[in-house]
Image (cartoon, rainbow, N blue to C red):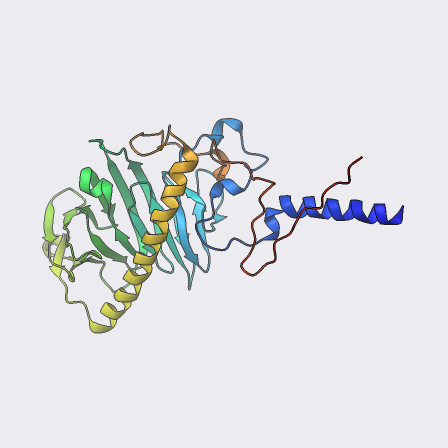
Length: 316
């Protein structure tokens, strides 16, 4: 009787091991956001996947403010929505890849707002608008910039992005440093174009050469002017580090995007535009529709872990 009871315990432990995905850590950022169930207080109507991007990388801590909800901590694989306000903390960084493969890497103490984002493969109404309120944001512009209209706003100017890599720096209010806009070559050597406009829409100039930059300074009459800026050596070295982090995030984010498209299914795959200008309620990150359920007959093994064999039940 005792042996039979012990055998029953072992069977229960084995079944618990099979279903206990939480017992294993997420090994890399490609973890699906569909692995976890939707929050218990998440309304069913908000379960539709209206997300526009995903957290691809993070160091330290970062938060999102969504709707009227308070700031919530972000983690790798969390989804991003239109109107989200993203904020990195001190000694932190955050990488986001959007559905068109556009990628942002936010350095420490950076605040950015996703004002709008619409993307449809082969569509003609693609657009994206981001607002860098403060801090340093590096970016790789992808399909929206190449097929539609991508803009990055700052407190002093608006940038028209024409498919390229760049860095925008906005000092904290009251600081002596001027905001800067920098254009860098893409990983394949291609150099795009960044057009600079004042807040009234007047053209201030354009960057067309790799490693070129503007400083946004007050000109005659208190008007903003885009002044050619020679990037100091120390700042250029810092930029190289930021671009390396950006490139890595872009690579990871593109792989995560493939998984996002699979989870969405044919109704939200490439070439189909979803209602991505909507946000979930209460600032939650819901589980997308159609996310696969965890399979119980094929447990995941960590590298070096011995394979477990299920005990066969005795024939009766």
